[in-house]
Image (cartoon, rainbow, N blue to C red; front, side, top):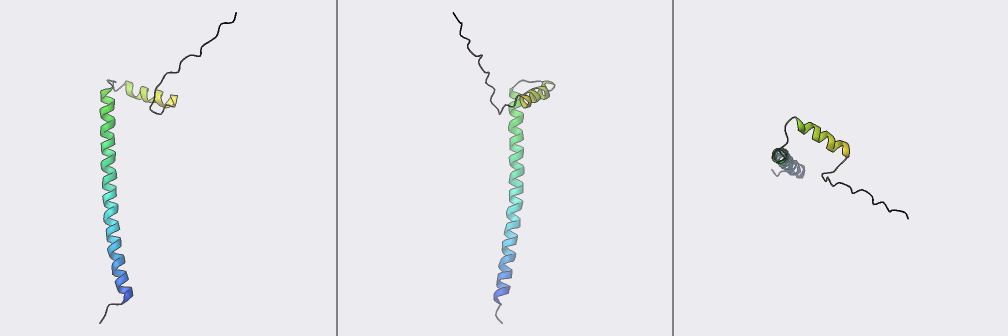
Amino acid sequence: MATSKSAKIEAEIGKVKAKISEQQAKLKELEQRRTEAENGEIVEIVRGMSISLAELPLLLQRLRGEGTSGQNVPKSAPIEKEED
């Protein structure tokens, strides 16, 4: 007895769903590894800054309050012209 078209399609659907499930698990693992790597990089940067643990929250608050986006460039004062 020959397998019907719908049964073949159903079998293919099952295979695709299994592959999708595997890929979703792989994606979740990769995202977790990326987060761990980013956290490690952040820790290295902070340790390299020689900031005490007590000073770190204050620094982060200041950065958030200033609205900086990672660049901390002081603005120069405007030049005033002397009037004669």
